[in-house]
Amino acid sequence: MIETKTVKVANYQTLELIHQSERTLVYRGMNLENGQPVVIKLMGNEYPSFNELVQFRNQYAIAKNLDIPSIVKPYSLLRYNNGYALIMEDIGAISLAEYQRQFSVSVEQFWAIALSIAEILHHLHQNYIIHKDIKPANILIHPETKQVKLIDFSISSLLPKERTSLQTPNVLEGTLAYISPEQTGRMNRGIDYRSDFYSLGVTFYELLTGKLPFESEDPLELVHAHIVKTPPLICDVQVPKLLADIVMKLMAKNAEQRYQSALGLKHDLEKCWVEYEETGKIEPFVLGERDLCDRFLIPEKLYGREKEVQTLLDAFERVAAGQTEMMLVAGFSGIGKTAVVNEVHKPITRQKGYFIKGKFDQLNRNIPFSAFVQAFRDLMGQLLGESDAQLQEWKAKILEALGENGQILIEVIPELQSIIGQQPPVSELSGSAAQNRFNLLFEKFIVVFTTIEHPLTLFLDDLQWADSASLNLLKVLMGENQTGYLLLLGAYRDNEVFPAHPSIPSNFMK
Image 1 (cartoon, helix red, strand yellow):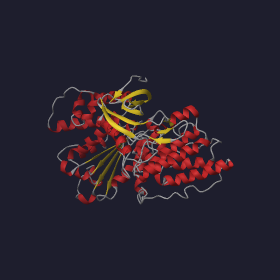
Image 2 (tube, one colour):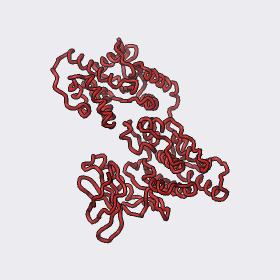
Image 3 (cartoon, helix red, strand yellow):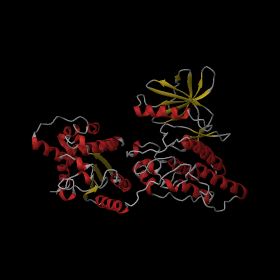
Image 4 (spheres, helix red, strand yellow):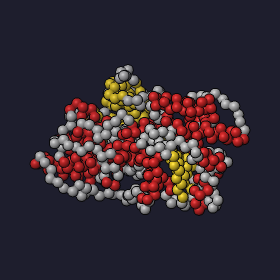
């Protein structure tokens, strides 16, 4: 429902609500002292989270230090209720998404818009800024002058490269319909400025065809599509083939196959535009001839590990078909064991499975199940990012599995209480009885997440530091009562264990 109340922030007053989402309200307003038109962006939640506060400050801090004409200038960041109000310049523009709805974007109009955005990205990337949320809603265009500007730096990064963690699609940074494969956290690749080119490709695709390349109500389906599916070809006869090829190059799955510079993209667009204006068609030429990268980038891929990765992927395929398997990866510290294991993210996404990991610590060997607890606290965080309906389903399944003993697991996985609620106290047991009860309960708990709909991959790192209770639990999971749809991955430093160490495969099941 659109909110229409008037809001006053310091000497600024709102006049018209122009955008509303779950997290923000955007108004056209004015400075009451001098009548200057402004845009006022408020936080939508009455009690915003710490992360929302950080993101709101981030967009102000980044934009105010950029001397780029095509960036909407922020005037000030003010405290408002429990959050902030961002005061920005008002150039009388509307979002590109709204412009397309009102007027549609023809191929003739597309060229100037595309070149303007490419120029903006060039300046951003020269300042080592990754926007991470390029989409029509964050691109403004003036209906009359056709001036183009970029907004919303709330999740932008000032780093030349960053890593993203594996999250449920509902809480990923960015907009899922436009997000790059590496930004999903399931590609085992870092994020750099070329992530923006992928999102720009999706934006261009939508402008030229009127629809998104991938559409689904299921967030995991969208993530999987971005990672492995080829977008439908642009078959509109009004769109020149070479322009369609530029869009497809922007949307390449691997960053190394996209444009490597905004200037390279701009050169190809300008060349196409000139020919199109003069002759109405574009003669074929090699794309990227002037696409020179201005920084040293090493392609992110695994070298010499094809056999190991394929062995791992084959194991997951068997697990997705109903088996339970355990694989151990050995090697010195820093040799790349974790990098190999992380390659399993792609098929996990295809099967809508869960990947969780924990790490044993040499200094915490007296804490039983420490890596298991880390892994399942991570899983609870992923579940809490899902919809209310899905949470209710998980709650029912977990309670059915744990019965009246849920409090035992809540004591080691506090996040579980946010899903199943407070549980009644349980009777105390001692010695092996308590250990056996915990093992049985944890096994039932794990079974909840090992289904044909959601296979589970559990990665335990530094097994050489595992405590005896954790090793016993692993034996239980790999015992006769195997549940299926479970892949256990363990990594250990074989140079730091003695020949009889229980984490060595030949000794593990003794």
